[in-house]
Length: 171
Image (cartoon, rainbow, N blue to C red; front, side, top):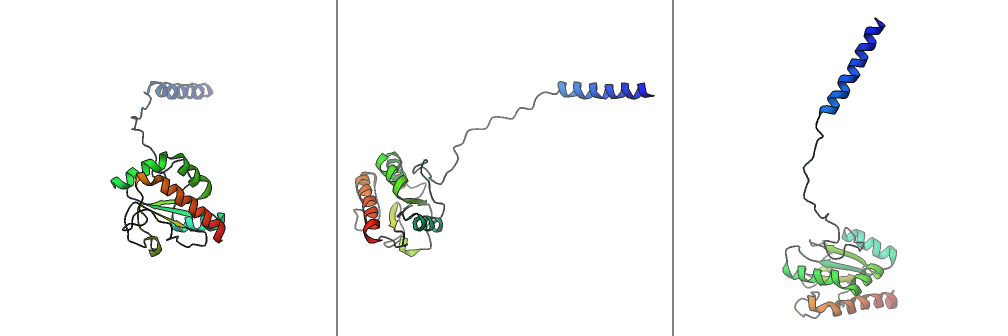
């Protein structure tokens, strides 16, 4: 009887082993590589971006840094053109990384102070750590005061420096 149990156990092990050996390995079809969507949305993948306006305000206040809010749309050619220049400009990327809390939005916020002259894209506004929207830091257009175009990058850098200077002199 013991010998029969031993033979059956050995047989069971052999059947299990050979059936596992005979099965072809499962191959999963290779999926197309997709670039993960980050909070940067292409404006600077190496930068740390706030997720919401509320989070950005908290970070601005706690780190005592000005907040730069970029309003844009993924399918807007003007937004795309500005994004490309913004992401490639080393001065802007360095300033944004070291001196600002940054947020980019593809939707409007409930804070009407962020659309002082209308809801258009792209537009960039600055908010100081006291949560005051700096309506005095504007682009070069009188009908869209917070709009920037790819050719306005030097003005944007200058306005970023102004936002930092106001931080030091007013707070």
